[in-house]
View 1 (cartoon, helix red, strand yellow):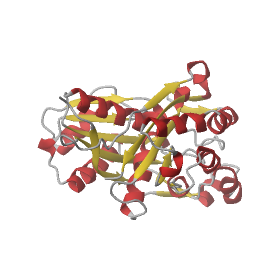
View 2 (view 1 turned 90 degrees about the vertical axis):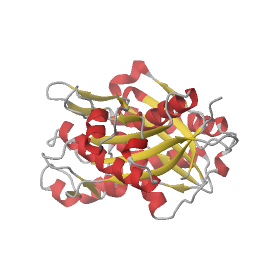
View 3 (view 1 turned 30 degrees about the vertical axis):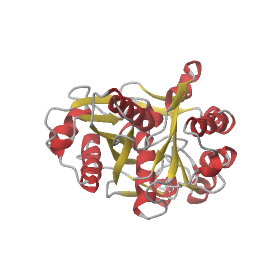
Length: 316
């Protein structure tokens, strides 16, 4: 008999380098006022050339493990959501395991771009429910600066680098599951709306298509993700959406109807960090005490492939 899972700790990491709107205005034809009004971003963190994505992931994972009071030997599965790993093998999860000294875990990378973390969290939850994992490390990490065309003012103002992690463990018998059922899917025929393609790979998107899809189609899907956990949007203590753009986050959160919820707005200081954005924002909310243990929080990722995945989790 296998039981549900819960998040026992979270952690996050951002590189030290800060890139401000003023600095961007010196690189491309833009301005602080334009960026704030269109996307709501004030600054973003950019990793150095000697900081690969697995290093960002490793720092976040180490913090989450320490917060859980767990050792590397306690982990039997590492799932990393990323779309910016340069090397195909060893994968990012294997490199994180080597960095932290995790002995013999199942190590897999999952590329669902900006919806990656919520897909990875569901995958770990399913593994625990199936009895194939007892303690998983789930990480979202991306180094978007490495796949950005820094001369394209429509995309370079959006991106940032970072990582966030969660420790997922089996619930005790009789304990209520702390990770609700996932609602996930995609719109393959619109997959070209967000791309990281080519040699070298470069990020590009059809901003208006993504905006329309996110603000018109996703609210109902996010509400259904709540229903799967037996909750209404008014029951939520927080809503952590993929931090794509403040102009997408605010209308989407309003249309979900989570009237009592704190809405994560980490995009303002972090930019769009792709798969890192949800665990980064969740970890900061918990660290600041804006959510407390047991609070129901909707996580909802969306973006590349026009994929989405959402679930309600209990704050660790």
